Image (cartoon, rainbow, N blue to C red; front, side, top):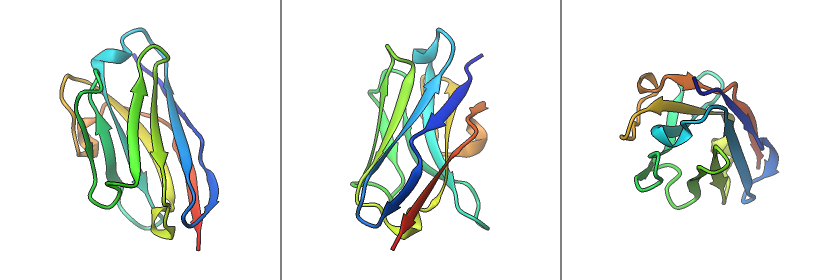
Length: 124
């Protein structure tokens, strides 16, 4: 069973950048599609980005497309979320998630394993 640990969150000014990392345990990381989700106070958890096990299939939420980049390093069992041109509305707890599947998914209920989350705060 894969376990996930996120890191890289913090406080940044609008227009700045952060890079989130999600380290996975286990030896079958490449068999897992990975996703990033976020949840702002008082709001539902929302999809941010997803990447297939091979990295060949990637999708983004419209709100982050062109500003965020998801990638993975299967040799290091890690998935990344590079966030550029950050806006105050990007403030949220960011979660990475995994599902053992060759496909990518946009909905949180499709994912089997979740990290503990990392706080991202963007000041105006």
